[in-house]
Structure formats: C-alpha cells, structure tokens
Length: 400
Image (cartoon, rainbow, N blue to C red):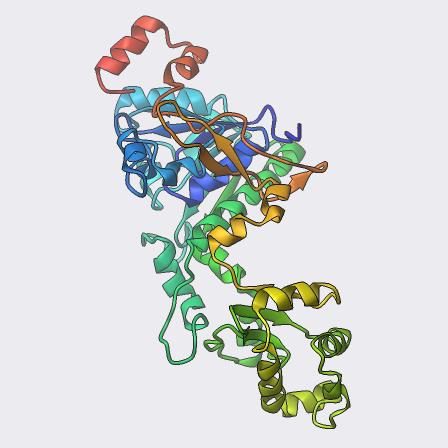
C-alpha cells in the first residue's frame, strides 16, 4: 500500500470542512490522525444535512465525507485536566492542526510556542479565513464569504446576472488540499533541520491562488476580469459553450490543428477556405460571424453525439452533465474516486471520497470508516498512561 506518512501522528483540533479535509488527506496517506472533539457534541458537521437518521447518530453526511480513517477522542480542552491530556498527546505527535480563529489556540494554551515547548520538532499547521497576520486576520469566515471577498463571484455567471458564487464549497476543499501539501513540505523541512515549523494556511490566500493567472493580469496590465458566462477564457470563437439539439456542449478548439479537425469533423470544411476565418488573427476579428455559423451547425445534433464524434479527432469537448450523470460514468469507477462503507444500523452504503490521485497504478482509499464520537478515547488515553480508574473519573467529570 502507498503510505508515505505511515508512522506520522497527527493531532487534529479542526472541524467543519477545510481542516478535516486536510487531515483526511494525511490519513489516506498513512498518518495516524487523532481527531480531538468536544464531549457530547463533536465536530459541527456530525449533525444536520441530508439523512436525519445519520444526523441523529452524530454521523451526518458532512462529517462522513472527510473523516474516515481517523480516530476520535473526546476532550474538553477548557478544563485543566483536558488540557493536560491534550498536552500529553501533543508530546507524542509529529503534526498539530487547528482551525480556530487566530488567537483562540493561544488562549487555550495550545499556541505554536506552547506546542513547540512540548515537541521541539513538530509541524504546527494553522488554518484560518485570512491568515495569522494582517488587518483582517481576526475576522471569521466561511466558504461563501471568502468567495465574496476574493473576486471570483464577479467573474462567475453571465453578464448582467449579478455576482454568482461557485456552486460547491471549493475554497474549503482547496484550502484543505493546500494545507495537506504545506504539512508534507514542512515534514521534510523538519527532517532536514530538526526544528519545528509553523505553517499558516488561509482560505483567502488559497482562493486567490486558484485565480493565479487573473491576479497576474490584473496587477500587471490593470485588467479587470468580468463575468464570462460559459465562455472560455481563451476568447476563441471556436471554444466555449454551444447549444445543441439536446444539451449544452463545452468545446475547446483553441489551436490551429484543433480548429481544422473540428471543421472537418462537423462537416464544415468550407469554413477553412472562407477568407473571413482562414487565420487566427482574422478569425478573432470576425469571431461573431464564425461563432454564429458554428452555433447553427451544433444545433443539428445532440451534445452526446457531438461529444462522441469530436473524441475521434482529439478535439476537447464534453456534454454538460449533472453530478449524478457524471458519477454514473464508467470513468469514475475506473479511477476509484469513491469507496463504500457499511455503518451498523444503516440500510444503505456510505460513499466517501478516496485520495484525488492514484499511486503505483492504484487508488488510495480509507481502510476504516469514519469514527463514532469518542470511539477511540479510551484506547488512545491508555497509550499515554491513563489507567481505567482515572479514565472513569475523567469521564464522570465531563473532561472526556
């Protein structure tokens, strides 16, 4: 099995999406992730959402999607006894992850300096909305708030429709992947230097880096991106969205070989000899007329038919699909993007994501299901010297 992080222990104080998704990547890569949760409550995502029967068990779908392959330990960090237990665990760890609002970890006694004092070669990862410094650092935020802040909403949707957010919480999940990459880089730095590394990951930073080319153009050329609807950023008249006899087709015939292959494949080789469209420069000048000609042609067949045809000539094209249609594609199963778990008392399988890349020709999937709240508390605490009698006392006092 591909487990490059085998032997790495991660103490995870994060909840909701970005932080847990970061530690989920680490768990899939072989790390032992110990998720510390509040007794009786746990991660916010354990409740709410679809399938109320799962929410009632504190196993909501929002929680299940990024917490498999982890251990759950309940500790009340606001009690001296709970903090002492957390400190013992930190002293055994290689990585510490938190996504509190900046300043909260310090107030709990688990800021970078306090944690480094317990383990001088630890990787300390903080995930927040705006980062640990700067005038906005103390502000809270969620994915849709960051989408409003970062500028993406004024580039999304059709002109005149008003700002539109991206449908999925992409900033949260991208931030989680960014944090996982940062932690793995920091682990290599610790191996090289033997000293602790503090990693500061921000949702706004991540969101802006997802628009790297737009940032460069804005700052360098004073360009203001506008809403572009479903059209390609290349602005090529032979790329973008085209209505068909049934469905919408997304097309990318940007370079000359693709354009020529497109015209011949759709039965419009005459376009190639028309003086209005013979070179890229004149096609740009006469883009409106070329696009209208292509629109008329694409309306004669379905998006499925055009997709299949253009595949044969290596012109990038895809019918616009719903999520259920995409997940029904054999390609998704071939890549092993989802795996199934059975939960006791649940009459349907639970589908959770695997790692987003393959290693040695295989997908990397979790080996254990998402944990019940506090399922590993006794075992983990026993490993750091908490005997049964003390464990019962701590449980009775609401510490664990």
